[in-house]
Image 1: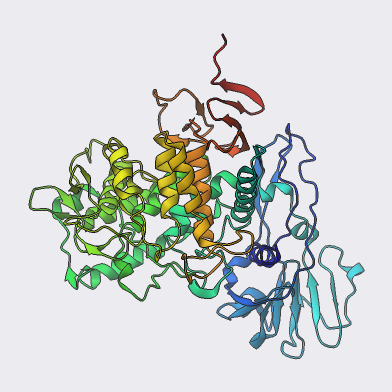
Image 2: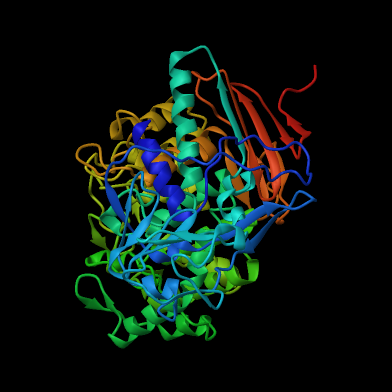
Length: 599
């Protein structure tokens, strides 16, 4: 647990608040739902990583007296350093977090920022003003400023943040209940692993890069990991922090629009050193909506930072749209803003599609999500473009059957002319989850049989978690359990200490892999599935307050006698108790469904 303590501290620094011990949800709405939580104060010192200044934003989320969550931005005091706001002074500076020190140090400007304080070196910054008043080492005591205390020594001035920044309400951490009932040693191990993943994703719900800030490799840049792998899980563990993911993508829209304009100005370059020509009849369908071209690797400002041909992984636009659609269903985003982004993503695809010789449309010269192959008509990318356009403009504008979905043998191919027996990572079966393409789902058995175990161990962890979801949805509980084990066991000797990106030699801690394994728990073993309209082919369908529906159809491993999970889904408290051959559901603390029929 030593590493996890270090990692947790780093995560807490990133969000600027204290951590809590309890995940027990209150039974009823009442005003005392904001008890203070324990502040972690001591960790072992080991390592350092880069923190970008944007993560210092403060947002206070709490329960109101009616049991609803409300969000309040917390303003900084007017703290000027050298006549400039302190954030402006540290902007662009590279700060280092040292585990155990609880601070982010910007040495060149003499400022350190911790989870509960700002520290300024007066030897470097001599002009410091708080709310218009100059402060010196001896000018104030903490008693004079009960809300914002200042004290110091000859070396530094320390400005304490307001108390409610240090004592986060338990609602900030999200609520869940989880347990596996079994005397099996394997089940007890599985419970420990899942509980760890729940905690990990809980604390990393709003993180950007695939390592959750624990590793400097990606410098806090945002990839599809945030949209496709982390968000579907995080939204069911911590719907409050995870809301920052859709908010960030919305905030990055101007940069995505500028990215498209640059692409257009450069003559629409695509992979294989080719140029693309938009089709006028498709551009007309966009009806003048500004295209949004989200970058494969988004830096802090939402600009493209990829140094490789991954800039041509054009499924990323659909990944963003799909995440926002899920956020709408779960009530994690303002609908109007999200719909506007989805339309911008669809407009991009209407500018990007090619016409195939057989008259269908598709994307040529793209990098497959498999990432080993640059291809024409990648299955997932084509299907993502098809879904995004129809989601944005409706079936009347974009009916089914216009996009090429390549085939191989008796099922779907990963891309045109696909003859491969190994792929770097899951690609084709992503059309089964998270995309859930009806035409592909009709062949789920064939797809699972063909693509299972074809992801390379030299690729990043994630792929077999998708296989586990597909197997569980097919009712193949033994295969699902084995795939789930293979989604994390090869990548770690101890999940509480590390989760390598790759089975051999990969870096750690790979939060994407842990989130994918947890997705298999939710969308596979518990059988969660979101719908726009009420489905008729599921026994248990919960209407969410957002107008969407959640179907629940568990398929738990034989090794687990019973699984219990309770959390907030679409603003409703949903508790599932699943056994091998039966399950029951409570909604908002009331009985809702019992698969055991009365005799």
